Length: 136
Image (cartoon, rainbow, N blue to C red; front, side):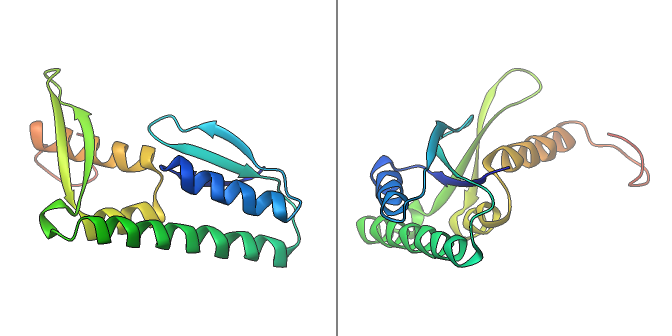
């Protein structure tokens, strides 16, 4: 089992990889199934090393968010988009307010967010009457 870190920006990913290299830690990179890149670090690192990695990851993401916010201060652009396909085959972009999107990303993977939005869309397209325990 390894630890995984998600990046959408290659420059930020590369800064994280340089940090790992400076710490003598190998970081593997692979494309994420939905978007971006996953950087993997070995499991079993000492707790203080793992904590340092987590702090650097958080620092880089905060810096990236601040840079994006500084570039685009318009609240109308603070959105997360989730692309889904409706049951009739029509593509659809579900727009989620930025604060909610950031909160979702802090606890769910992109795949889990996509699954959640798709499930909600299916339930809206085909509502199920009756008790909650009834399958849609």
